[in-house]
Image (cartoon, rainbow, N blue to C red; front, side):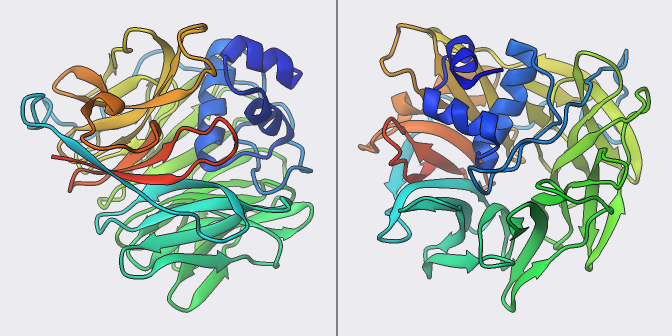
Length: 397
């Protein structure tokens, strides 16, 4: 489908949609496209598109699906944990600068328990993305790349940052970066722009993502001690696919898989077993095994909808902490805001709030919240109407 048509249907910025169609998207926009293109437009796609350069085409078409029924994950919590109340919650915003003089668009993708950030930026002249990590002590650190071409950082935990990097103009592999440098991670045997990618890492350094098989299918993958493990996919199609997006410190992994057309199924891997959670995509998980994705909370075998704010029409939850506080983004209804932009939101105790209404200082607008840690620090990105988005740290207590 042409980018202009998708932009009209989704009310997303036309230039961003064109990048989605070409495969040039960050982890954040990739997840937005993954959720919206399947649930709203109904397009068929091979899953998350490669994001490292504008010349890369997305993978081949792949059917989608959702089996009937959801299974209660082992040790699922009975009810929601304690969380702040509206009367006690206030949010302060720290606006970070650009990582380099030639950076025109900087996006944060993850935050760890120490407040360290991971993300990417676009240099001028734009050709490939640049991966970075950030801490209050060091500021921005450019992570480089596997082949000197381009890279994107997707998750962080302590000294470890993970993501994907170009290994040639036509191939990309997952990477793990630590104090000794960037290390290429193995694939499941496939090649191409999505041969391997890493989207999540826990405190033990175990990472998850996806990799293409020699057959052409894409499977969720786990990376531990330099070894890749195929996590499998739901059965039902001649070539079923799966993607893993996050892992908690207990080793519980969440993602999505297909089994029949036309819907995807949120899934969880617990002790090696693949458990369907319900329709959708699970992109984050907390210590209790509560998962979120789309505007859905997956808890105790139930799919619990997250209320959308008045004046907004769609969005996605992107993070959840151990207190059950959820963050994400929502898109304004057509005509309510020009140009149409996303707003970051926070959801707790059954209620949803626009983060822009809770902040106590200027920020340039909280456009998307992407992750939250247990200290209440939220990684977010400012409004981007002209390609100059900046990372934000939103602290809510």
